[in-house]
Length: 165
Image 1 (cartoon, one colour):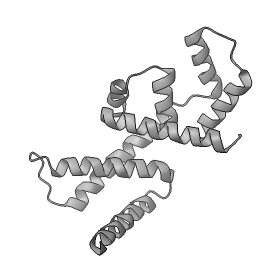
Image 2 (cartoon, rainbow, N blue to C red; image 1 turned 180 degrees about the horizontal axis):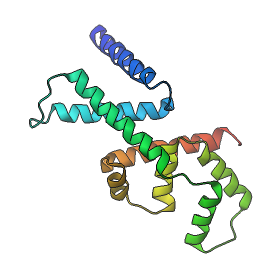
Image 3 (spheres, rainbow, N blue to C red; image 1 turned 30 degrees about the vertical axis):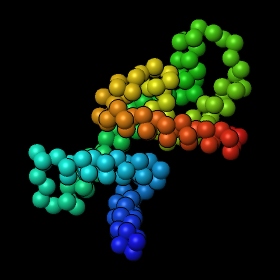
């Protein structure tokens, strides 16, 4: 048990040093997602006989840097205002009988989410993209797309249940 505790502390220290190296440019919740995705990719690489790794820490940092760069690109890609959300929704349904106050509250909650969550929600629910299409756009696995969207929906639900913007 002490060995496991020591490894957890080492991982926590490593994650902390990576987070501080970003100068807090990324929200901690987004950092956790990026870090976990990096761990998953790193573990897959270790078990792939076609990939020879000379320096494990350097290789891990390289995967992490690539994921951060990709996240930053996504951050600036799909930025919609509340009015654009509403216009897209109305254009898809052709209806105008929505409760405007409820929609405004929903948009306010969505706006409070990290940009990557906003993008995932837009792609899945407003642009009706499949997880396969989302995975291709974001260069992640289909499973990762599902997991990230589930996390985003959970965050949105928590915001709706705990706050009134």
